[in-house]
Length: 510
Ligand code: C2O
Ligand code: CU
Image 1 (cartoon, helix red, strand yellow):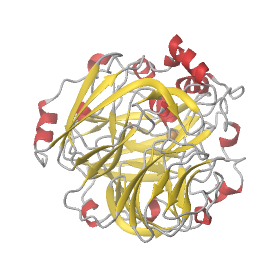
Image 2 (cartoon, helix red, strand yellow):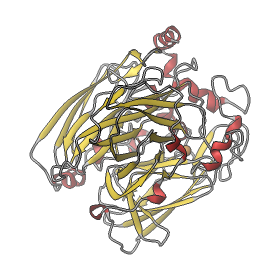
Image 3 (tube, protein in one colour):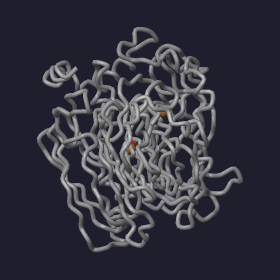
């Protein structure tokens, strides 16, 4: 694998697909807008601490040890990359150096930042060319658990990601310690880079999927996924790619990271799903989880046995440590395989890589269980504008997706692949409603840049605040947001392959 990857990198073949964004969009002239005075004014009007946090990210090819498998890949120096910490209201200054043989950017996922720092190439900035650098400089307005990754092709899936924690200076530390736990699916080992996987998906016509697995199993009925899928809140559709490894903090289950503490301690776990194509069901053997934050924002704490996280979602959970050694398992929802970390407070055997704590099949917390904490409630008001987003598509030749048209690997919003000329218009100050209508048998974790939205609950009121929400097959999720952050904002599926195959649009302030 390593040698093959290296050869691919040296030959530049791994860059296929990186031009996707540029190739299917409009001429750049309309897209790259100079920093508007409005954007600057909104940023300046924000609450500031007066403190500046500086950091540096170097994106580069390199060899990474996943705890057995050694891979040549692209990363910010390690997988996950460095964790950046700031306090709400701080100015964050991050110098990105691009040591990759391809253009890149950094997107600050979930942060309501100034638009020109959002990291979308040819829309909010010119992409950062190889051997050049770019300074990201913005205020982090809201506390919470966030992450960052390039917004170019499927570079995220190579391991280019890291966590951004924004602390709340006003929050009392009601816990003894904190763990950052990052989940990933690792495509290397299929013998293809993520870009090659995307290219083969796009060129496939339903057979001969090469390194791809799961194509046959993800069709209309979600068949072939075994009994477990029957109980899955995702109702079937698992993912488009079969991954050989699932990682927790960059390690395969055979060589898990150990998270240590003392019995009785209260631990805040910041869980981040950085995977490109995999939702995870997470449980800790012998422990209950109290979910306190979703996508950084407080929820009314709710206790369960496990949590479900779509790609791009984060949750903070509290647990009270037991006495011994316990498996923290991230089970790939609807797929075979899992990631593992070890929670240890005493001597005891290392859990087996295949450990299946009973909690995985207990009460699984999903967005339906969540309601907003007091500070996260979006006040009810009249909706000024509603946009319907019909999520459609089709998988290699199956012609499966309703709402999509052509055969092949295509994912659409309102029947179109990403079309920058037809953004969703909003105006400053409006309450905007997005109705996310899934017309496929796959789940789609839909993400809106630069805003958090309230998921409208069963009674029609604005509920839990999030920036990424799973839309289950054939279901509709309605979200409301206040348009208070002017700019051009990507809105897309955070399955990196779906997004890059067209399931993207833009929220555009007029
Ligand atoms: Cu992590 Cu456009 O998103
Ligand atoms: Cu999707």
